[in-house]
Amino acid sequence: MGLFLLIAFIATPIVEIALFIEVGDHFGLWPTLAAVVLTAIIGTALLRWQGVATWTRASQSLQRGVFPVNEVFAGLCLVAAGALLLTPGFLTDTIGFLIFLPPVRVLLARLIKRAVERRNGHKVWINGEGVDPSGQHGDIIDGEYKLSGQATPPPASLDQRPSPPNDNSPWRKEP
Image (tube, rainbow, N blue to C red; front, side, top):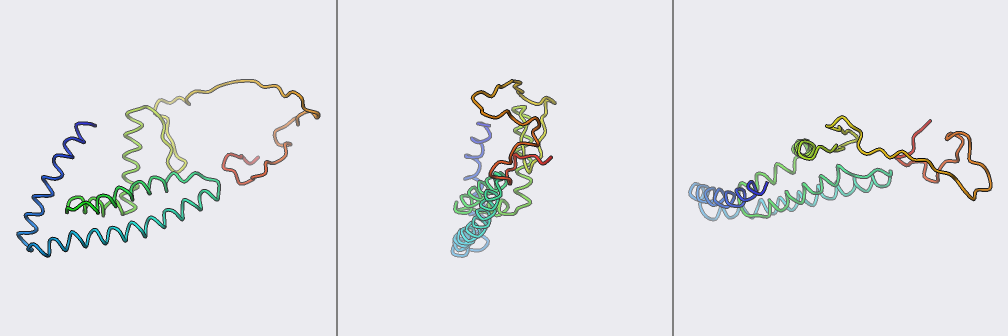
């Protein structure tokens, strides 16, 4: 991974400079500079628009009692896309605009999920789907407990217990 980042940090400016020279030679200095400024302005507007939409979806998920995993990932992608669009250059702008597309983010999430599962052997959950590559269920702790100091005996069945205050909890299983 370190070698990949080193190559990326060395190759990206070289490619960007070469693209600036080619585009500047073809269109001229001022149209090239205008294109760079225009992509930064468009990127900022897209970041704001999609950022607000992602924030709204995350808030709605939290109100339903569901952790907004997809929205957090989308937010991280939007931050990366915004940084790439604010960086002067045509290659970084192209990659930044691609990350703004939701299908590209879904593909990126799947690639990252596979890489993490392959590298660490841990299961990763996206949209409620998860696979344990080892075929095991992880660490299962079996234990017993005893209620003490209770005035009334506990109900005989789990179905007879009173409902918790938040019936919309994603952890509550319906009978």
